[in-house]
Image (cartoon, rainbow, N blue to C red; front, top):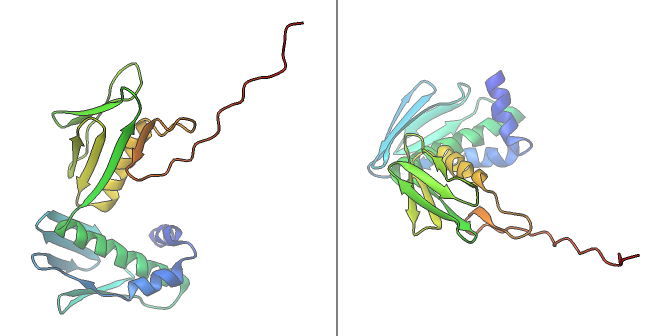
Length: 201
C-alpha cells in the first residue's frame, strides 16, 4: 500500500490524464529486447540494459512488438498508476535505444568546467574547485569551458545528476551568474535602490 501511495503522490490529480497516456501501446524499436517476469521488466538495446520492478497491480504484456499496460479497475489510484507505469516503460525503451541527455552552461566571468579523469571539476567563484564524480551509467562531457552534457540511459538518473551539478552554483537572482540548464529562463530581481536623502547633519 505504501508503494501505491508513493506512485499516486507523483501523479496527484492527473489520474484521468495519465489514464489516457496509459492506454497507448509502446512500440518496441528494432534492436531492443524486452523480458517480462511478473512485475519486473528488463529491456536491452544498443545503449545498454535496464531493469525495473513495477507496481504489481499493473498488468504488462508483450504483443506484436508492442508493450501494453492494463489496469485492474477505473479507480483514481489505478488510473494514475496506469499512466505512470506506461511512462516509466516508455522511458526505459527510449533510454536503451537512444539515450537521454541534459545540457548545462556556466555563466560568469572566470567560471569554467573541465574533466579530470572521470571527475567533473567546476570553478564557479568559490575559493576552491568543486569536484563531482558521476555515478555508474552516467557520462559527463565538457564542451569548451562553459558547456556540460550529462548522458545516460536512465532518464531519472540523468536528471538527478544534472540537478546535482546545477545545485553547485544555482543562478544568482540578481545577475544570473551560476550554472543553468541550456535554454533555461532565469528571472532576475531588480537591484536594490541606493539610499537617498541621508545627507550629513
